[in-house]
Image (tube, rainbow, N blue to C red; front, side):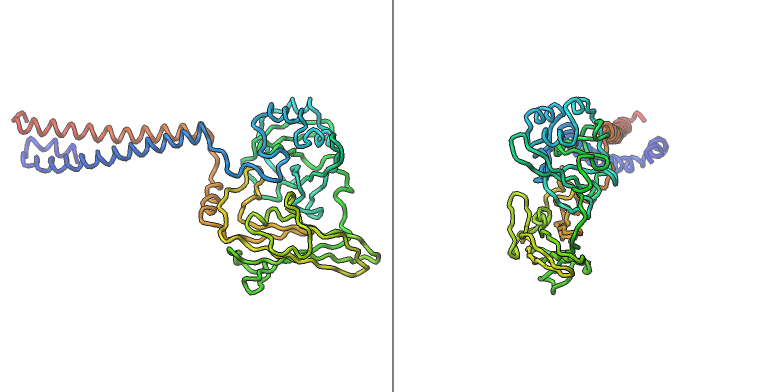
Length: 391
């Protein structure tokens, strides 16, 4: 259109009015593109801050972390190892990993699979869910227990976890996760004997009922649990053997209590440190069973806390309770959590990809802005020449 107007202008001077209208349109377009350039520049500044100085997660640590809050570097991990912080040296010595193997670790993404196990502080699952205990002696005296849990038991990061990997004669391939200082192994280490996995002598089952939603059995009802809903969990042990067995009823509530609080422990003892609700051991006669029931109530305002950086099952809009079997209840989380879930499904882009995209975007916006200014200046010159009688 611009070329057509200018080429016909010497033959039809009346077109100067159309040129004036076109000049006004270009002026408005220049303002729009100048504004676009301003916002693109601001967006690129914010993006550069996020890329080159990323924010720290508000949920970067978990009570399950072997080293609370994780480590910043391999040297940091080795320093904590030498200090035996959080019994990390005692634990790795029990497994069969020494300082030479740790010093030889190389930075690499730890990508989980179905046979990958992560060492955690407290038990969350059960022997039936392939969770194994690792008892060890503390150098300061006494004994303690940590747990190997399958990494595929929680939401996985397909891109993997930041950390370091290496090998040991006793363990084979292993990794140290940066976010929590936890040991990652391919399969269970030899230090975890088959007896640690244990075969349940009593059958354990778990059911949950939403007392607020007409005693609806959770699992059969697709509705999500809502704020202030009261959920009753029933733990049941059944002895199908012909001899008496002794068993202990307990369940870790750390995941469920992220969105709720315990209002009725059903006579059990709750540990504020381990978040475990337990009852004394019971002796079951042959072909008998016993039950224990506790009640939690969801918070009035469900948190929009980001999914755990070191514990992927933390604040994932699912309340998980395990007793012989895993029971999950979907939580009606705030809209912000939905946005987080959608964003987490986007492919991860590195610094190089972000810089290339930003450069292309900036060059494109600058080109169109400069082109509009050039055309506006050309029209101004043409109108001046027309009025001066040069054309």
